[in-house]
Image 1 (cartoon, rainbow, N blue to C red):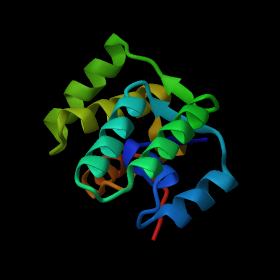
Image 2 (image 1 turned 120 degrees about the horizontal axis):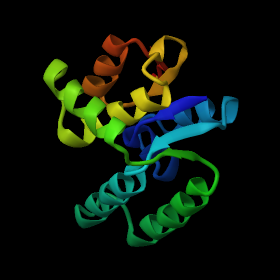
Image 3 (image 1 turned 135 degrees about the horizontal axis):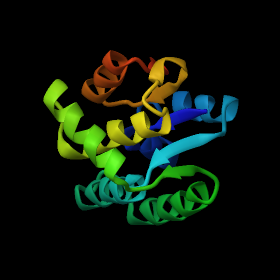
Amino acid sequence: MIFWDSSAVVPLLLAEDGSDEVGDVLRKDADMIVWWGTPVEVLSALARAERAHAVESADVDLARRALEHLGERWNEVLPSDEVRERAGAGLLRHPLRAGDALQLGAALTWARGRPRAQAFLSLDARLAEAARQEGFEIVMVT
């Protein structure tokens, strides 16, 4: 099982740098763990790409449908006081934005505070480094 940050989910849905690599990771380990807010973060990324005309509207529509299908098979860490507390503590230790801290808090909650034996996938270098410092094994994609 791997905890997937939103930044690693987007390339599963849109052709981007890293799309082939994250696709390979998913094929090898299809048990995805994500934060409850991941669908909103991914939809935000899709909307930004569409507004910037970086992606055709038809491709964004396909990506939204693919997100729905992907969401039917992943496991979500639900919002809780524990996630919020771990996110807040993470903000004190790492230079993260709030959404990234919530991702890390959700991953730590999933790992039951013992991340050493758990894998974390993020294409966001700052979040990946924070997860590494917390003890997660970082899944590398090149």
